Image (cartoon, rainbow, N blue to C red; front, top):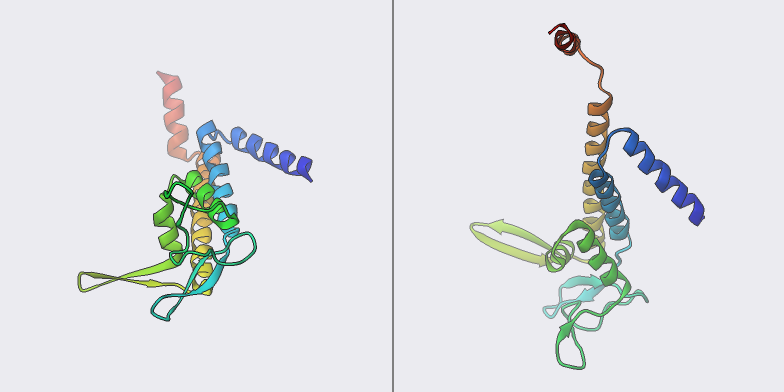
Length: 175
């Protein structure tokens, strides 16, 4: 199977090169696809907030929520705040690196809902199902925008010349 993925990657890259995508554009396409796939790996588990409401946290590799109540922060042996290297946290770090996004902001965007009412921002925790839906919505948005951008780029590359374009091209040869 590894060979098949490499073959598909190579043929996709070659097709984009043939359509005049720049090396940076090709890299960005693969970067966004990778981020979207990694987002799909995030798992959320239910947790109870201190006030008794339902919330959620990123799941670790065993499908359990992480031990600290904030969902992520722990202390290392030197007393410094750190994040455990678990599956979903690792995936989220990778997504942030690929999208050049801030980890804490993306995490908050996946685990909470913010609403502005009368110049006040109300933040509520999402439950595991709602966080999953937020993740899926983000994946759809990334994929949708990428798809639209690719189709637009291809159409620009292969568009048929209008009569005006032909006239302007011929006018160059007449000078």
